[in-house]
Length: 201
Image 1 (tube, rainbow, N blue to C red):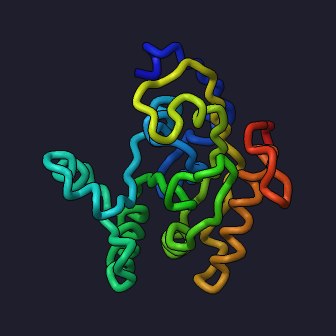
Image 2: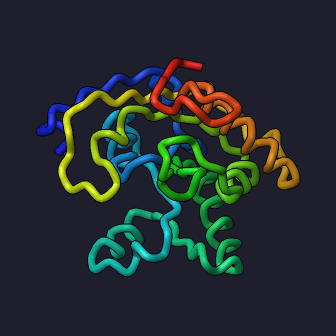
């Protein structure tokens, strides 16, 4: 669909993906196209922590389990620990994970607040976090839209953050470090403005 629509991709920092073992990819989340664009432009095999609602979709839910994706019920805090443990074990075994730290798509286009679960996973697994800043994608498929518009998407892979140097108690500091790098790459200031701009941090 993206190619048919005439989408153009600009990718920087792909060389940072030379070794994706025990790596967590953390992009901003603005569109339903984010995950396909990450897979298409970065060319990596990744797992993901996926909300339980998607596992109820016939056949698709089976595919998620078969691919080694991990189910999490965001409405049940007690279920989060088994999901975290499973993700940590998978990362330590050498897998790469895609985690959207905002947890859901932004409604404004600006970078939202980060949830802490992905940072707990990365810290406990001693992972390397690669922040990724995506811009230009929201205009391709606006909320409520069904057809992909032509346009240019910029994907910036930013310098890594070694999560192994952070403890559980440092999760807020780790989250702030990653969020700050993505915000800077998107051209957002402290007030979260300017999400449409993109410059390599």
